[in-house]
Structure formats: C-alpha cells, structure tokens
Image 1 (tube, rainbow, N blue to C red):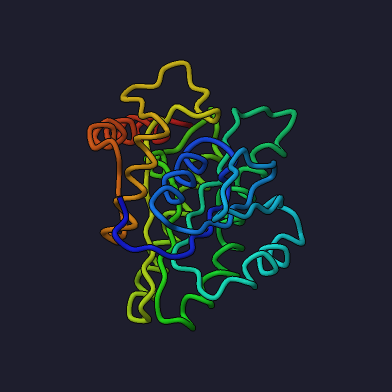
Image 2: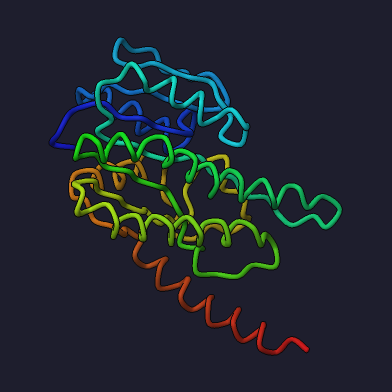
Length: 234
C-alpha cells in the first residue's frame, strides 16, 4: 500500500483495474478524482467523478476544469485502454485504439504534467502491455498503440525526473477485465492483483514494471516467431 497520501487523478476507472485502484486509494486515505466515459459505482466522501471521453475534442478542457479546484495532483494513473480484432471492413476500430491508448494518454499528460512540474513533484503512471514489443496481424493497432505509449512515457521519465516528477509505465500481460477477449489467457492476473502492482509502483517509482515476469519471457519468444514470419513475407 502506498506510504504517501494526497490527491490522485484516475482516468479510465469505472471498471477493471482503475475501479479497484480507486477503491484501494480511497481506503488508504487518498482523495480521488475519476474520469471515464461512464458513471462510477464508487460513492465516497473523498471521491469526485467526471464523465468524459478521452477521444473527444473537448477532453483536455474538461480535464483541466475537473482538476482546477485541486491544489495539487500527487498521482495520475492513465488506465483507459481498448483493443479490438482487425476487421478490414471497419478499420475505424483500429484508429480508435490509437486515440484511446496513446493519444488519450498524451492529452492527459498535456494537462496534468505542467501542474506537476510547477509543484516540483507528482507521479504519472500509464498502464501499457507486454504486447508493446509485438506485431499482430489479428489486432495490429493494440500493440502498436501500446508501444507508442511505453516509448513516450519512458522518454518523459528521462525528461521529468530532474524536475521532481516521476513517470512510470506498467506493462501487463493478460488481466481479467472486460478488455481481455482472447480465448487463451495464460498466467491470467485478476484486476485486484494488477491494482496491487500499480500501488507498489506508486510507492517505489520504478520507470518500467512488467508483470507477470514469466509472461514477459513468453512474449519475447513470440516476438522472435513473429519477426521470422514477417521476414518470410514476399
């Protein structure tokens, strides 16, 4: 459990990892502002919820208004994410994965990080995927968008640590949420287990966290197989 207390902003927290994390932070004494496309089931004196879509043109303005009353944002967790199988008749679903997984995170950074820099402290955490090293013909936008998120947050970590702001990227394998649609999900983590990983990341401040570790090794093997398949294309 996090040793510090303060105000946390959670984006994408009406279900899954974000919802569990919201409840755990509130239980440990944090105040929380949540942002998601749907209403939240959380009712707590320390919680305020804002309904907003991270892909909407007015999202940065809505987010800025949501956090304006808060003196300081001590932690921000970007937990929004989607992934759909490739449908060549509807490539808009692939585009939306980039909008949610990568651009939504970048727009959140745009609003939140300057406030953290001004305060000389804060911690931004993005939830990525072990698939960020893969190339997929089944759902190409998902690993590609997560690769962009991982690279962007690592770059921000280099830029912001001297300014007192921490940035972390947590790379998960399969987590038991509504987004986990694969028929086979080896080494499946529960949303509660994943939330505990995020809490430890908020405590320790490591830039890159990959869980489960055994799944990271499996992904490395898949990466080699996919690379060989691509080289064989003519």
